[in-house]
Image (cartoon, rainbow, N blue to C red; front, side):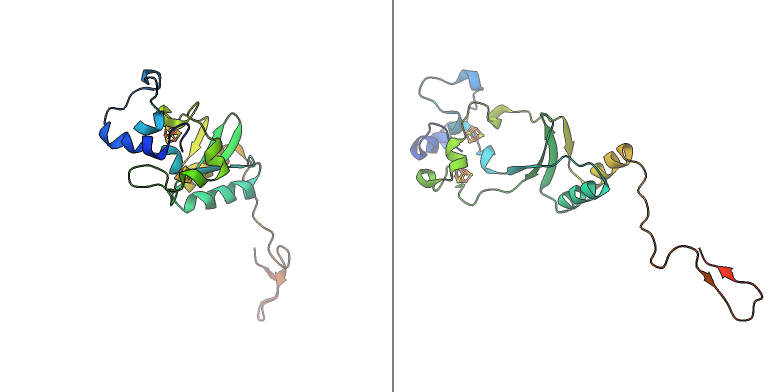
Length: 166
Ligand code: SF4
Ligand code: SF4
């Protein structure tokens, strides 16, 4: 996403291989001119904090799809989907800059991920990771009750006493 940059100004990025730090920007320069459009290559949605096995099972399913990450930032859980916006051009400009969605227009470079090392309080990248986390936190998962109730006696012809099948 762009802050104050225009599509034209961001097009300068190819001729500026130097990648300055945020505080090295000169007057008139925009961070987006030096960026690979990091904020246009994913989206994140807040999700409820998981509290039981079913909640963790849902997160396991999110992660099983790949290109997904679940993370916690300032105690809020998020699902991140790593997918590039269809309007991001090969030179990292926005193809619909003047009519881009509101969320893009309101995003600024003030605290963007240009130089963010992406440190999260918690980060889960695979189904196995979230499952191990759940196993460490939750009591053992109870098996669902079998239909018909437990231990019904089954009488087998030819024996003198019932055989109970567990
Ligand atoms: S619409 Fe433009 S600014 Fe918004 S995510 Fe897509 S490429 Fe980026
Ligand atoms: S991550 Fe920051 S610098 Fe990079 S395109 Fe988005 S707003 Fe601009």
